[in-house]
Image (cartoon, rainbow, N blue to C red; front, top):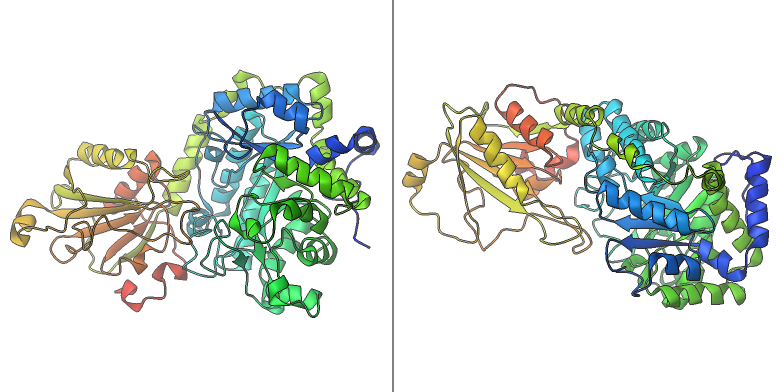
Length: 573
């Protein structure tokens, strides 16, 4: 018999009145309202891209009784307005989530970035991760967000993995525990539920569960000593939520289900032996389990949607992340409940876990007394001086000099006045992509420091006279801002043309300095570069900090992990 939730125990710790609200609410629900509480809808500022309908926000809540909301984009004022609208129009208060893994910039377009997992690891100072969690929670709370889908507790084992390259806090369990716990400690200063991800663990392979079934190939013993250790730590320390990835764990699944065939292996979102047996029973997780986004191929390729929508709840997940077509998915879930795919016991247990977290945050009481609706004055915390000071501190501690084998530093306007600036971005127009403003920020900052900057346009193989190039150029500054999401299984530097002129052919002609503003393993495509810096982000403090450190005005304090070499001996030369 599956282990059922105890709302009086961790992570809920509810009192009698809170438990009573949960039980009374469930008892009063229709089948339709019960099913609705299992869904988190994704709202856009504009057309709802995933539900495929033209309903108003109020119609979505009235017809489908959604239990949770997430949103994409928006300024702080827009997001707060949306959340206030949703909470005002909801019968049962909503669990409203954001993806803040690096600071408040995950909650709104004008939120404050502090540090990614990779930057926190490089800084080697838990206060950086703590500040990222602190700022995330404060800026989320001002907007009305009550749940954070982070931190990412994945372990970066495989240097080719760009899915969690910047989001992972380390390459071993102990580092991940140290920095993610610091992040959570910072977030605990706000009234926000914490959701760690992506169970049973990403980072061992190079493929992306957005595009294909993810597979964690560790043995049972290897998993217990790594990901299992991380999850057990956070469960023991009261984490409220875990997000199940569309990731399989074949060795463990075959141990828990003797005779299980490869053809029957499913991701954690659909595998009861992972979602229920391993997580809720063996690791004793008493909180709420939510699926990762249901439009990802790791789930959609498993079976027909009509089967996996209710199948995720039947397997042990308590909430389903995002609709495809809202009326259709809602019908699939309702049909699965009425046909017994989701048993009455499983439905009630899921509802208790969902409503229990709402009760823990006393959302029902806040709705009754009006404090669930946020005041625009609360937005003053977004981008405040305290948070910007933390961003600057994180930049100073995290920026990492990976190599300087020709001893070409420091950069200075006397020796390197005429700089040729090269810029390479990732995909264009994606959900996450390089920022065209980055080049201008570098040009402005360099010019203010006394340099003359010319930007090299890509797309050509013509180099021209080498001697003329050296006469006109004192140094080359190569900037990589390769960012992407869900369009490739991994992201590498892609040149604008075959053997194009931005490729660092010039490293032995003029002093050359290369900076990555996102991924940490670009040396596998830039082994010829002799001075390489990992800087993790393109905010103004990072850009100014990079130049300060290249100029010797500030020391490099970040420390790279061994994966930066991408297993290439020539990368170290």
